[in-house]
Length: 139
Image (cartoon, rainbow, N blue to C red; front, side, top):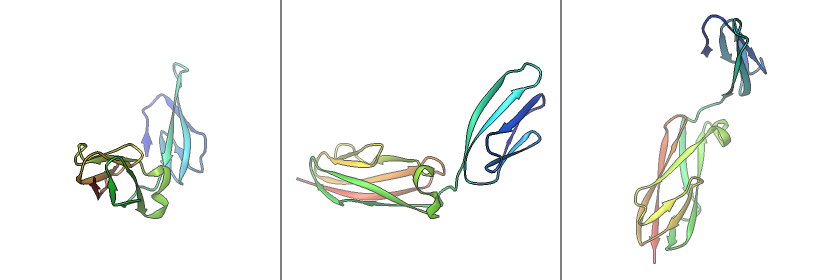
């Protein structure tokens, strides 16, 4: 719910997704709606896009390869519960436990740097949920 102070008028680009009730914007369905707040007194306005999503309740990682050679890569992928939380509604931040052994980029591609085992952690930026996956790097 989004609430705004007196002297402003709210409108929604799609009342089927975000419904305006007085000075409150209320999510009613999944999707995106542009909310416009207009000052009645000064005739100025601003907009914001609200995305109504189903947040993940559980994130589980897997990898293309759990064992890679130095210089090779492995793609980390994820599944979510509930399933409708997947796709654009899950925004993961990836991190390697040791960048000297393997690095991971923002799309989950792990690159082997030196022999050893690293733990890749992915954290959902919306909910804070996370999971880990171990990758072994060999010569």
